Length: 222
Image 1 (cartoon, rainbow, N blue to C red):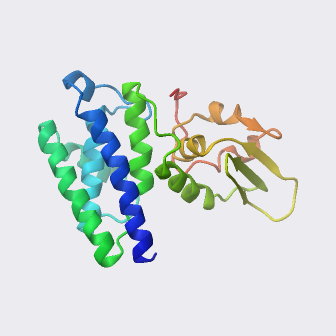
Image 2: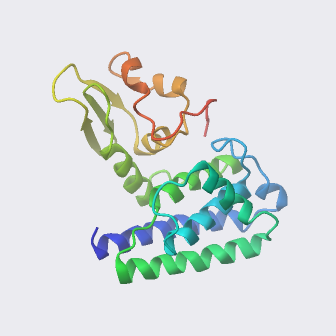
């Protein structure tokens, strides 16, 4: 990826981080301890701890992709007991370094991760918003571009279409949105929720190939 593309990823990362911080700064302890239904077993503070740790590990080279379950658990544990002010200060420092490295060496920011977790936090707090953000568009494009279904599939979102799967055979079509695409691709929708979407035909043969993570065990309603 070019330096300019890396810089754009850093901009999108910072935009999402600023939106999240705007939600967090008004929270009391009960808000920080609110359950995050899209991340079973986690509270808002756990989601934030993960985001801070990912940023720190991204800039120092310890992490370059999706962390393992063990790494994620260690990330959350790292900030257990830390004050909210200290957690946010650590995030600001890591994000600043991420932006610097995007400019100096083309480091690509983990945009899809932060944008996905932004909406996990919004769901936990009952504060939906920013579903049409540039970060959602960028992240949905990333996850739709790498679809590998076993049958011909066309995903139709509000401003584009994504064709994947074998070149021949009856094409299955799904009409959805960029926001929903990002959510089901990253395991924030149950199998039943995905099956109930606007399909051109019975989607059973393709459902299990559509999740990068998941699916969610229970319905996630946002």
